[in-house]
Structures are given as C-alpha cells and as structure tokens.
Length: 228
Image 1 (tube, rainbow, N blue to C red):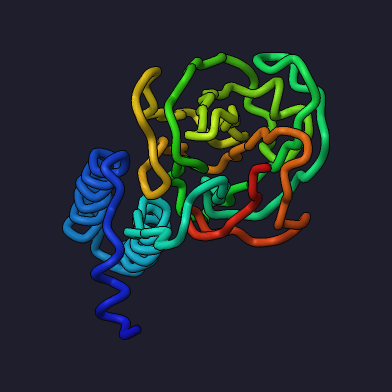
Image 2: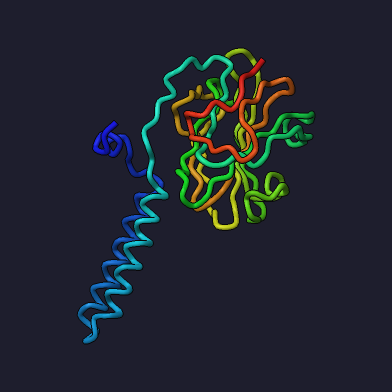
C-alpha cells in the first residue's frame, strides 16, 4: 500500500478537533509574539521547534485510522484498542457479574491511537461511569480504583462480556458513546480516552484466548479471543 493510500485512511478523531484548534492558535500567538518581540531570534527558533514537536505529538495522539475488521465476527472478540497486553488472568469480578472471569487488559501509551472499538457484535445492556483515582494505568489496582467507564454487551448468542475504559495518570477524560439498548458492532467506536489509559475486557471462563502478555494489539484488527 502506498503512503498516499495509507494517509487517506487516517483522519483526526472528532474528540481532538477543539484541542488541536486551540493548541494551534496558542502556538501561533506565542511564536508570533516572540518573533516580533525579540531582537535576537535564537529563542524564537528554539520555541518554534519545540512547538512543532509538541503539536506533532498531539496530532499523532488524536489520529483516527479508518479500519474494517473484514472477517467473520461470530463469537469473535477483537482488541478494543491499540496498545500492549498487560494482563491475561482469571479474576473475581464483583461489580456486575459477581463471579470469576478472564480479564484481558490493553495498556495504551501516549503514542498509541486512543480511539476505542466495540470488542464484539451485540446489544448494549448497561453503561455506567465511576469516579476514582488516577493511578498509572498499568498497575493492577487501576482496574478497580481508577476512574472508569464500563459497558456490558450481550452477543447474538446470549453471552455477556464487559469492556471497561480506565483513566490513567495523565488521562482526565473518558468518552463513551455506548447507550443501553442500542445495537453495537465491531468496526464501530465505543469511545475515546485522552492522554494515556487502559481498556479491560472481561470474558466468560472457558473462552479461548489468543493473546499473551507483552503482545502488541491493533484496535479492531487483533483477535484476542473466541467465545464458546
């Protein structure tokens, strides 16, 4: 695939529109003031280079590649986010299921795409937001203690899975598009988390898991499990 074709498949996420516009206005104002206000242009050039780097990081953070799964979705669980697998273990889930589940956690660094996709096709059963701490997202306690937004989805086969968007040390805003009662599909965005975070997926025991600790995932592309 050519670079031009790849670029055509990448856009800026709507959650970044105001942030990028405001940041650009601030950068232009500061750099213009420095250029016309300083006789020595060296500080201006230094600030200009730093500004370009910072703005480039912001643009990279809010990029939103257009992705289609393009395969059979029955009983398939796909990665809801870009990042790295930091947890694959059996846990006691006491907030909704009140039983043991397999938890698969994906940590998103600052350089990852931060759009989140629905991990399965189905119907949204429940959505809720919980205030909490802002510990580093890769810590085990982050799953239960950090601010988070949780979505429960029932697949067409009647299996319930849960996806939890978790704020991190830098993340201060979780956006969730899911609404109870609506149908949801792989390829659709479930939400967005700003500036470093994590997504946990809770699966029934007996689910066949395909990912391992440390493995990199691509949102809406990597198959992380298959339901019974």
